[in-house]
Amino acid sequence: MGKLISQHVTWVGKTDWQLTKFHGDELSTHRGSSYNSYLVRDKKVALIDTVWQPFDKEFVERLKDEIDLSKIDYIIMNHNEIDHSGALPELMRYIPDTPIYCTKNGENIMRGHYHQDWNFVNVHTGDTLSLGDTTLMFIEAPMLHWPDTMFTYLKGDNILFSNDGFGQHLASESLFNDTVDEGIIMAEAEKYYANILAPFNPMVKKKIAELLGLGLEIDMIAPSHGVIWKDNPEKIIEMYTKWCENYNLNQITIVYDTMWSSTRRMAECIAEGIGEADPAVTVKLFNAAHHDKNDILTEVFHSKAVLVGCPTINTGVSYAIAGLLEMIHGLKLKGKKSAAFGSYGWAPTGTKVIQAHLEDAGIPAVLPPLNMNWVPDNNSLESCRQYGRDFVKAL
Ligand code: FEO
Image (tube, rainbow, N blue to C red; front, side, top):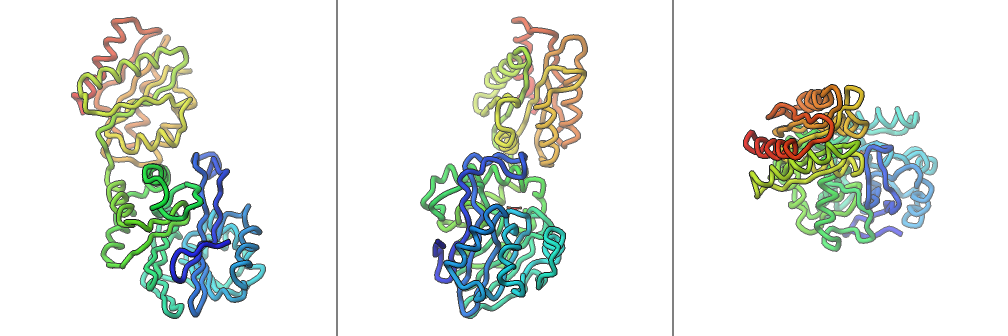
């Protein structure tokens, strides 16, 4: 059944408790997710977004329990990735002529996905649609995180429907942030931002400024994933304002892979050296082959520096480190520093590969790579500690 979230709005989405991977295998979702869809009932009725395709029939059946489908006057599609538009084909079987309000890019994407000549109505920032006592206003938000994205603001109930923006992959029976552990929500919101929105930091910055400039009275921010920001919705806007601007905490993250523990020992001794040189800095170590890649990326996202280590393997690096370097590259992080280290047998080329990738990702090295031949002895491990101390000095 739907859940009333304000005078005119009922949540009619789907909570997906068993989701552990999203975007194929690109993003881990340890705490599940939800696909939030909202039904706005006034003199006119609007449905905002749908749910992921595997739940299309369930969604439409539950929606029928909530309302006679023929009473839906408008469908609003804020964003048309399949987790939000996937139930549209099933819904449109019942109400094929209902106008679908979306951006021009949204129409293009829906046509590309579903190959249907639905009744599309293109909207732009500032366009409004009166529902009676309440009014919808549209705000284009391209590249947050697709070209079609827009927000919809419901004047009257004062809710910003922000789709992926401000979302979290978090399944929760409770719909509101004031009844869920804040630490968990913020951790998931940051992971979402780091892994999905970080490449678009400049657009986020511009959009937040524009949003604040509109002076909207916002009582709730209702994203398309996770809980609704009802208690202090300004908090998540504040965090986005920080996250979109080279968000670097006093943390150094060391990511490594290891075959026979030489590079692991190097990583641990470098960490010791960093800790000795700067007791205030948080140092975290992750084995890229063992830890979740998206959790590591979130740690890198908020670190001021990252050291990446790997033994040389066939003149290059391991599968885990190669994948992680590629993902770091895609995030377009700014204002961070790096260094590379690793063990080798007969040619220390792996660290060159790491350094080149990090520099290409916009994360310059502050020290030359540290290479150790075969298994480091006590002297070599002391050199690793010194490298950690030098790294702190070089930052
Ligand atoms: Fe939640 Fe971009 O889809």
